[in-house]
Image 1 (tube, one colour):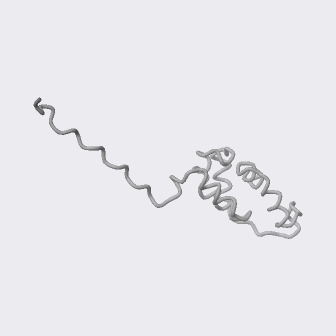
Image 2 (cartoon, helix red, strand yellow):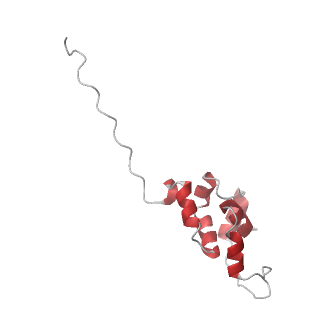
Image 3 (cartoon, helix red, strand yellow):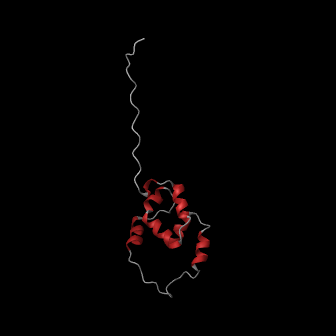
Length: 110
């Protein structure tokens, strides 16, 4: 027998390494991060990476107008009489611990 076919083709190159950002994190890892966040941290985290959480189905859909309004509104001065939520933070966090991530962010955005 002759070896007229030649050498086999080289294997394909390995895939490029992932960047050092959260774009490629699996949903399971994002959920692990979320479970350790406090209320204010969760809101900031969810707004910072909202498009990524949305692709995983971990947050409810927001219209572009509402999303930009939430992101771009200046922080308001908190007045003790202006708040409508009268439960202590600890109790609120306990309630939220029973919610799924999408329900948690919907609750906070409302």
